[in-house]
Length: 481
Image (cartoon, rainbow, N blue to C red; front, side, top):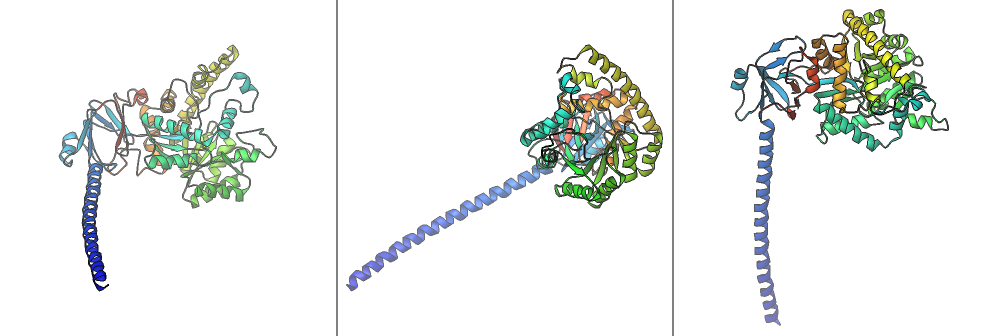
């Protein structure tokens, strides 16, 4: 019995030794593999860090500074970590560039800051309805398409908006202020997706849901307990000062960047003042849609940061806006024959409608030309926005948006002031003048290039050939890399 036990113990000890040896080898193998993986990960991280740190040198024949109007020629811009590091002559900047700098030579092109659309609606893509439908609805040109957008799938709207954002960016618009009509959280979520690099697009200042007074924009909805439910998908109703403050807080909770209000005769000065006070408490600016002179005065009295459209602004109101530092956002969407251009390919127009549109085109040209002249004489701060929300046959969203900026030149504004309206002026209106609106050291590396001279021919903006946002090349039809 003693021998059996001894043999068993010996066998057990031998097996234990074998197991320990195997375990030891396994641990050594694991340690080796872990070390190799760790080294690989560290190396990959170092490579990524080195890759991220690689500088880019952009050469061009000219660089236009919108604020001063000065042109630097020839020019080079050094970009690193998404920021402008140096601007100067090609030799000077190249001498200061780190080893391994990537060079993009744009030849005879003109560099400008990335364009800024100060007023747009990425989540709308309204197709003009047939004449009979327009005539049978209140606000029949716009409201039916808006209502359809509200009740459609939010996912569908998000996909359309993502496409519009990409098209804006490809046309040289590197920043937008999206002022409502995005569902409950569409523009804040799209902004975050773009910032995270999941989808391409301009940086977005998102307004969340628009604040409106009861009865504005969408009228005559089904009253059977549906009106409020439908409207809440798109807007926040302001009915008294308490509800005005609550609406701002709801958008702030959604992490909106700006508050958008539509003012009409139903919105009181006290209600709008409550909006502005609460928004400023939340460190948010307030943009107010106002068309008629009563609504414009309400926005002025309430202390809005910018007033949108201002079609029927008086000279006295322009003076008040100037004295208070309120921005005027020019939106020339319907200038000229825009309405005919978006209607003609989509619907059959009667002879009467064609004549009415032609007559309207003439009136709009005259009226807007006078408005632009008065704005510039008044000294009020101004920026521009496309107010784009329409399906424009034959154009991408970006192409349609930039085309509206050109209308300002047709309305009598100088080419340099047009460019200011969508760069340096717009950056100040947004409160981002320290980040964008100029190609300067320390600012975000948002650059566009056109083949010709946009001061001589402002339509060059419609043919942007190079786009960089945050130091990343989005489009390059010019340069040798």
